[in-house]
Length: 115
Image (cartoon, one colour):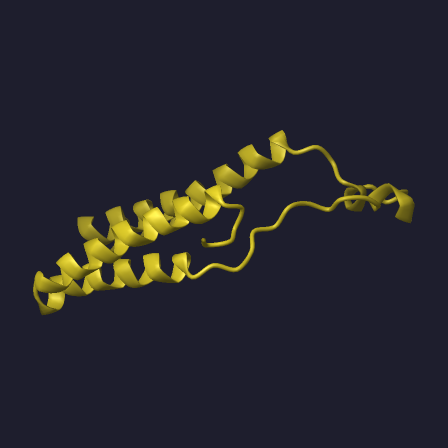
């Protein structure tokens, strides 16, 4: 709606298309969460008449702390900065990204502990 209003008053195509794209970018995580909520079974917290014993037991499995998400983020930063400072940092970023991906794979196969 805002994109149409923007176009009517400004007659600019670029800003209107960006506003439409922004709306679709908002729909992307929203549709994912809607899809995921349809697949989940209700938990004890969702029931207002639940007793404390309904939530007892194993809560879930949580991953241990890892350095690899930070390494992947740094690789993305270096690859992005290569557009500004030169393509030499893209090579460093790509090597770091490949190393981090292999590190994540190795860590997940060993149960969260690097060996």
